[in-house]
Each structure stands twice: as structure tokens, then as C-alpha cells.
Length: 307
Image (tube, rainbow, N blue to C red):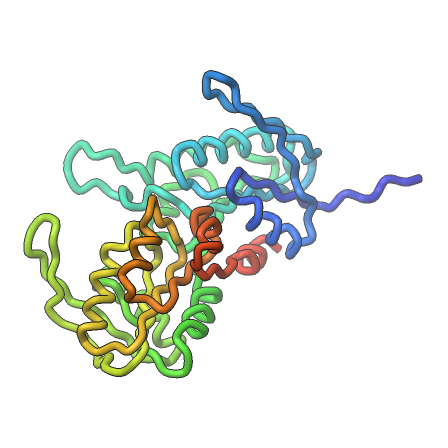
């Protein structure tokens, strides 16, 4: 009996990204890559590629959520190339370290750059490597990758419908601050809705004060968009400003739901939000779906860039 033909491509993932990788795999018609893993008593990690990849297109899905995840991506990718993968596509749905994407004071480590250089040091597959990055906090980050093609995927095809579904028939698209104003304005134009921007002034090293809103939100729903939600401090401040201006309903939508610690619970406890929506770009968002976070998948968007 003849063995079934192997798919021309195979999809692997690091821990925490199994669900997203499986959705991508099904969309592109690839084989599921198997990895043997174990941890030694001293904390050292063991990984072994258990699926044949020689001469095949290989996709590795894994975000740089923390240093351990970043090293897991690096080690597994290196092993895949050593096993003679034809081409390596490194899908990084969430690129961490974007807070430190440039030096502000002398002597600061630009961690976004050093991590990009680390991933650039993955040996090249015979037909090359490429990196797919989703909704980066800073658009300059792809330029930190050296000797490999880095592609910035914009999440509008997923975020736009998610905002529309959350906002209903009549809503204003709001930003948390002026830093995301251009992106929010672009989304609002695509959706053909009004945009609202918050103007702030810094009153101390740790405190800002809202001084103006750029649109009338009284009696209307406001969908607040930000590329990522971490502790939610800026989001809560913006929500209170919109509520104070008369907004009837508030929804928060983000691409990357980081929510460290009890951040999601604290957002819910404010009573400000009718719903909070994130994509499955970060494992924490996936884990919080059972607690009421609404999660939409970026799998189809990623798959479109792999075929």
C-alpha cells in the first residue's frame, strides 16, 4: 500500500500558539509539524523536530511574548533550517519589545533592534527566510531585520469588521491619545464613521490630563481602538473622558491583547465597557476568552500572505 503523499508545506508552532497555527494550517492545506519537547531539571529546554521538512516550505508561528518565547522561536527555527527546510516563513503575530524601539537617553538598549538582529541570525534556508509581523507598534521595526525579508501585515481586514460588529449601526471611532490618531483616522475613513481624538497635557512625570475632545460623542456609541492593550491605564483614562463627554456606550478593540496580571479584570471592574475585543495574536487574549474577552482570529489574514 502506497504511503499518502506529503503536503508541500508544514506548519509548526511554539507553545501558546498551537490554536492559531492549526487554523493557519487548515487554511493553507499544510501538514501539522510535530516537535518533541521536554525540560531538564536545571531549566534547560529540549526541542526536536519530529516531522520531515527537507525540501519543504516551512512555517513557524510564534510571537516574541517574552524572552523564553523568543529563544524558543530562534532555537526551533534554527533546527528547521538545519533539517534542510526549503524556505522558512517565520510568523510573529505579536512582536514584543516595541516599547524599546529607539533610545531616548544615552546608554539605553534598543531591545526591539537587538531581538530583530537575533532573529535575523537564524541561518538561511535554501530558498531564504522571511518574517511576517502583524500591526507593529512602531512601523520602523522591519528595518531592524538584517539579511531577511520582513513584512509588516496590517490588521485592517480583521480589525475593521471587528470594530463594525462591536459598534453597531451608529458609532464614533475613538483613540486613546494623539499617538494613534493617524491610524484611527485611517480606520474611521475606511469604515465611513466619525473619528474622535483626545488631546492631553502632561501635568507630572506620571500623570496626564485630558484637555479636549475633537468630536461630539454625546448620546452615541464610542469604539476605542488601540493597537495593544497592556495594563489598560490609557484606555481607562480615554474611556472616562468619552463617558464624561456623554458617550452612551463604550467598547474597546485592540489587535494585541496583552493584559498582564489582573489587567483584564481591572478593566471589567471599571464598569465602563460593554465589550472588549482582541485578536488571537497573543496567547493571553486566547486564555481570557473564557473570561469574557471577545476574540477574533487573524489566521485568514496570515494565510493570505503565505499562499
